[in-house]
Length: 416
Image 1 (cartoon, helix red, strand yellow):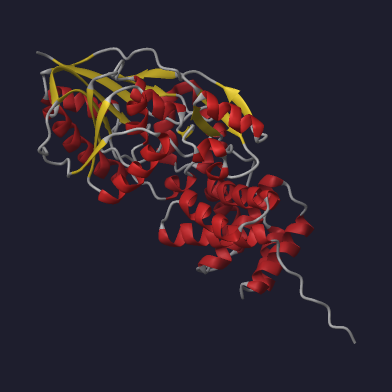
Image 2 (spheres, one colour):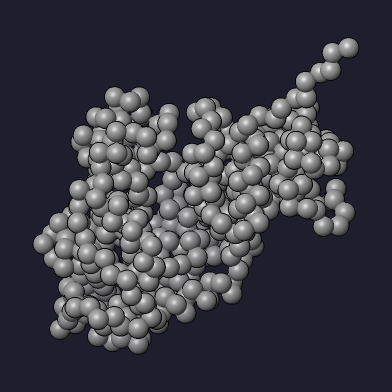
C-alpha cells in the first residue's frame, strides 16, 4: 500500500504567517521583518509578491477581520492560530480566493505548524464580513476622526487609498532611469526627478541602486527638504535625522549638512547610504531634548519623531498600536525638540518643522504652541511643493492619496 505524501503548504503563505506572527507578537515593523525573511527564503518573484500582499493586506484590514472572527471564537486565541485565521479570512473575504482553496491551504498550514486544524477548518468555512467593507472601519475610531478633521470631504477617498499597496518611489539620476529601464522596470516620471517604479526583483539587486543612482523616498518626505528652499552652499542642520535620507537629499541639493540623532547606529546606516550615493555629510550623536554643542545654522530641518499616522499605507501595523496617549507622549517630545531647534537657528534663518503624521496635536497645535513660546519666530509661506497639500494651521498637510504619505510641514523664520 502506498502512503500518500502529505501536502505541503505554499512557501509564500508559510513565510507570511511567520512574519505576521513576529510583527503582532513583538511590535516590530513589518517592512524590515518581511525584508529579512524574504532575503533568507529566496522565494520566486511570484511567491515573494504573494507573501508581501498577504502580510500587508492582512495588517491593513486587521480590525475588520478581527471583528468578523470574533463571533466564531470563544476565549483567548493563541497568537499563531489567530494569525492563520486572520490571513485566511483576508484571502477569503477581501481577495476573494475560493473558500475551498482557502480552507484546504490553511488547514495544511495548521497541521505543519501544529495548530488545531479542526478549528481552522470550521472557522474559515463560516467566517463572513459583518457588513459591507467600510474602509474607515479599518482604523480606530479616534484616528478616523483625526483624518476627517484634517482632510474633510477628501477623507473617504483617503481611507480607501490607505488600503492599497504602497508604490515604490525613487529619486533617480539619469543613469538610474536608463539602468532600470534596461532591467525591465516600468517607470512613471514625476516632478523633481521622482519616479513611481515597478520592478520584477528587489531594488537592492538592481544596478541603479548598487551604483548610487537611485534613492527610495516618498514625495511627501522629499517635500520637507524642498520646504527649506535653495540650500546650495549653505550650512544646514538636519535634526533627528534618523537613517539620513533627508540628509542625503540635502547634500544632493548642494548643502553642507550636519545630521544629528540620538541613536548612533542610525548614523552607520546613513553613512553607508551616502557613500553609496557618492555624497557627504557630517553626523553627530546627541540628545536633542537639550541644546547640543553645535553651531547654529541659517537653515534647520526638524523632521521630528512622530506617530507615523500619515504613513499607514506603507506601515499599517502602526494603527494597531497607536492610542491618543501615545500621540500626546510624542507631542511632548516634539515640543522639546522644537525648542532646541529654535536655539540652533541663526537670526534671519529658516526653521522647517515636519512630521509624518496627520494628528492635530503633532501638527498645527505643535506649531501654535511653539510660536507662542518663541515670538522671535514668524510663520511664512512654504515654497511651491511637488505634492498636493491642504492648509493646516500655520503649515500644510500633504494629501495621502495615490501613494503619497501624509506629512505636516511648517516653515518659520527667526527675526534678526
